[in-house]
Image (cartoon, rainbow, N blue to C red; front, side):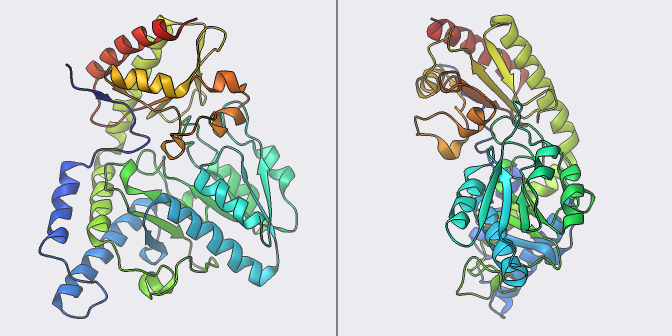
Length: 386
């Protein structure tokens, strides 16, 4: 049997060999607690601060604006809750806005805030899962304090006009956060050029380790802690730092800084070939989601329920058995039988949304794998066609 093909890189990526080598010493001999003042602790502290500088430089931030977290979900919670609560204490503004196609780490956080002192408003996205600037403008009031709109959608790859959104929000003194988990390290992200106040990112989407991410908060942004019981991360994120993870994240960033442009071109080629191959298999009953300018790392496709027996779980299982690992949407919602909220938000009927698959590429994927994957897709389409 041929080696299975992994086309689920938007869910997670394999750790880069160089990242693993950088992490090893901090899992073996360099095991000091960075809060300790002896030599073991000082070595750990130096490693963390060097990593902080590397990441800050990569996004155009200051090192003091970077806070390490356990991943994107914590970073989203930390920034959203931290800024919203701190700003409410100062101004009493209680309205917060986001889109209905965000990751659940954002949507569920908004839902919890809506149960307390805040009024959460969801803006509908268009059929490409992008938020429209006019809808943002129309949703703002004098009570609006905070907005969160993702940079690149984790299911469709659609890219929001983050800089233009910032230009709408900034004159209103509305704090702006972007969930950049899927865009960080894949396309240029400069926080000063974008004009954002906060950003979330995660290592395991760019060939770093799981369990580590970071939050960027612009200097002067009000931010209350999410976790208590420790003075780490300048009293804003308690808990002993994950040194090996932090070092791994920084190494993944260094690699991306050197290879981001070449990798973008590589996955763009894979995406074009894959989409062209799909069209040759069925040019009428398969829709590609996310728009023409979607992130090339992701291909989101939806099958017409009039032509196919749509059942995303069965579809993913069939492909897996036949050697192709893909997703039915966000990995964080896998195992659920209801259709993706993102795909539904773009206007699909539930029976069509149930036929949505997400194929996502990484630097390690090849043209040969695309061709093999299309052969598997050919059999898959024949199997599920009505």
